[in-house]
Every structure is written in structure tokens, then in C-alpha cells.
Amino acid sequence: MAEINAQMVKELRARTNAGILDCKEALQEADGDIEKAVDLLRKKGLATALKRAGRETSEGVVNSYIHAGGKLGVLVEVNCETDFVAKTDEFKEFARNLAMHIAATKPLGIEREDISEEVVKREEEIYRQQALDMGKPEKILDKIMQGKMDKFYKEVCLMEQVYVKNTDITIKDLLHEMVTKTGESISVRRFVRYQLGGE
Image (cartoon, rainbow, N blue to C red; front, side, top):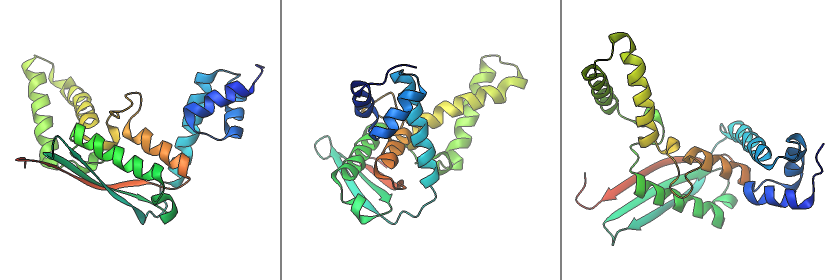
């Protein structure tokens, strides 16, 4: 069993924002391996986040981000359970970072089910045709199309997008980190992105 010292706990805390006891336990479980301990804490955080996911989120903030000399703007509504969390600087910063991310990445929706059927059908047809044009056999067309659709969703669904400020995580990971920090269920309710002269 590896010796767990205060420096290791401190480093793990800095990387994960988890509590001292959680960090100690994770390090013991990972036999002193910091990378393994980070993964363990992320999984634990994810489990906690999923447990909280069903709780009512009726508080929150609407935050905005204006970019490019006023030619691009985003409004985003992020909900949480209590007014107390909604008023924290950390929560407001989270909402602002989301608005900035949306400005940069142009998502079409929050989750897969938010993407219109019309857009999904059009993409599927394009990918199917591309595979046919490449001479792929009929029986694997659906598999190819599904792989391309998964990639498409990762580009256009906010929750699946890679976070612009930290490309090691997705927006869903960022949200789960926030849930773990606040101890509350958090959800992105809606957003709108305006671009001068755009649709």
C-alpha cells in the first residue's frame, strides 16, 4: 500500500475540487496513483450528479455574452435548486462560460432530441449517399451512417461538445463538475444565439 501524504491530497484537491476525505479515500483506493484517483473521483462525481439529476431546478440565472464588437450575442438560462447557489460567483461564471462557449461553437440544441427531425434526416441522407458514392456495400451503410451521425451530434449538441476552454472535457463533464461542487441539480434550460444579419 502506497504512503498517502498531504502533498498528494493537496494536488488531487487542486485538480478535482473534491473534499479532503474524498481525495484521501480515492488515493488509497488507487494505491497512490494520482491519475487513477482523478478518474475515481470523476466517476464518483458523475454518480452523484446522476443521483441529483431528477431534482427540481426552479432557480438560476440568465446570462449573456456579447462578442465581436456587438455583432454576436448569446443568452443562456441555467437552472439550479436554490437561490443561494444561483447567486454565487462560481455559478454565474459557469453560466457566462457556457454563453461564451455557445457563441464560439454554434450548437443547434442542448441534447440530441433537440435537433429537428428535418436536420437529422438531411444529415443521414448526405452520409448514406457519401458512403454509396464511395462504393461501400449496402449492408454496412447504416453502420457507417450511424458513426457519422454520432460525430455530427458531438459537433452540434451542446452537452456533447468539447469545452472550448478545456478540450479534455465536454460540456456535460463541466456541468457534472458544477453539480459535484454545489451539491445541487443543475440544468441548461435554453439558449439563443444571435448573429448580426444571421437567421
